Length: 178
Image (cartoon, rainbow, N blue to C red; front, top):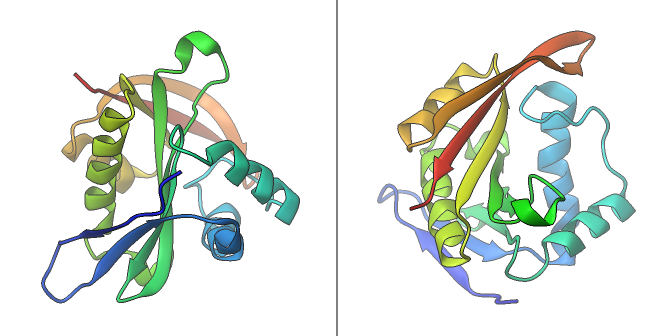
């Protein structure tokens, strides 16, 4: 696994950094993700994960196959992004699911599109053929963002998820990495 640090230049007033996640980052990763679990449909998880579950998750993402990156803004951790396995079947291992989770301090600063483009470059470098996303249909801003960076809607799973005592439609988006 590489431990390099990368920087993204979005605006001259923001110092945005990316570095590979390590076990010591689990509390920060969990804090950002748990906010999404408990307060939004940005994730289909309905319960917070235990520390052991997070360690197992990071172990699955360790190395170059499914990297996890810590996102910093002016040297403060404001989120994380990853390339995750969307499926467990061997024939589908050429697909990755880009994930971006930002704390409120990292939102509305242009990080989302930049991080998605960074993950796309990483996916190409790692030899992935497709990026696939499953997004709650009510998250229209997220869907528009994905479409702006080249994802296409390829499906709709009606009432495919249940969270907050409601049925949610799931939009499936794909970006072919040719």
